[in-house]
Image 1 (tube, rainbow, N blue to C red):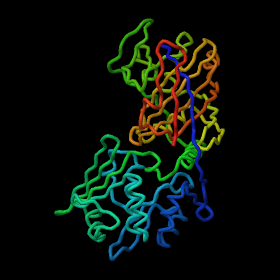
Image 2: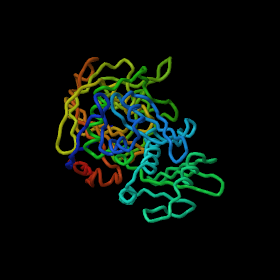
Image 3: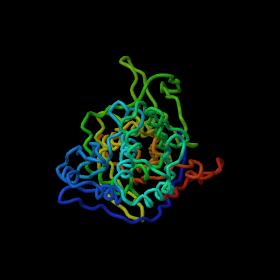
Image 4: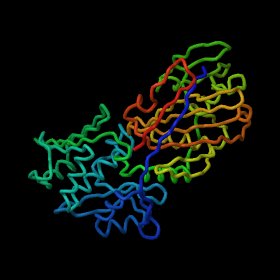
Length: 390
């Protein structure tokens, strides 16, 4: 049950910073600020007043522009395209990206730059199968009509590409884009790392923590331990957890005799009464570091909140006194990884208020898991994976 990994992280360089909108509202990226600058005056006032929407008249049509916030940060401004029933398949940020794209499409005057950016980011827009380009004849009122008044909407996610269709009468508007975390969040790497740090520091779960495990398809092992079915991210890294059966049902083990399995349960399943804290050294883009602390429960709850992550765990080293392990958070709809490396004394970890020292690596492209982990020989202890961020 003990697997070994050595982690070598290579983080590249990027530049930007958080900025202010007025005296209160903040924006986390240059791209989001560019959208703000396109807005009419009444919508800018609505943002300063932290309103959720504004109305805008475009070529005789009354449009609704919606806003999303995270604390004081404006995270999205978009043309209302979807209703709540439409937004059931993907994380909210995906729908926000679609709505922000079309808001920019209708408000920007620099269509040449707009379409050049689309081409660079592999974003495609079609009407009845014909791609809309900068030099295409574009009937914007027709596109707006099909978009806003579509009779049928459909969406799909396949091979790390999103496809949205809007249909009205004989018109089909198609919009596709890659599952790229930074693209969808409208941030570059440095902005995204900074925003995650701020989000974790001030995260309020708002609800009671619930351990996540099920008791279907368990395998009984030695010493009365039951194993969950295992899904492998890479050799030595899995989502397996470990349970014991009692009269009142199953519960995740947390026992000194099984300290590796106990640590794995702590990060994959969680415990409702866990008061442990994480001291995080966040390794950010551009060789920047940020240090902050939060509870383990809040950390897990933050990454569970949109139901778009799969969690995996691997032991890097174990000398029966010190454990080094990593939690791999795979953002399945954004094609990215977050990795938390944990260091703990095997005896201290069983104190209810223990603190784990951790390193956090975020917004890692997940295009190729094999490249991420590298290639190593099973017969040696010198196992490693490497991360090349961009």
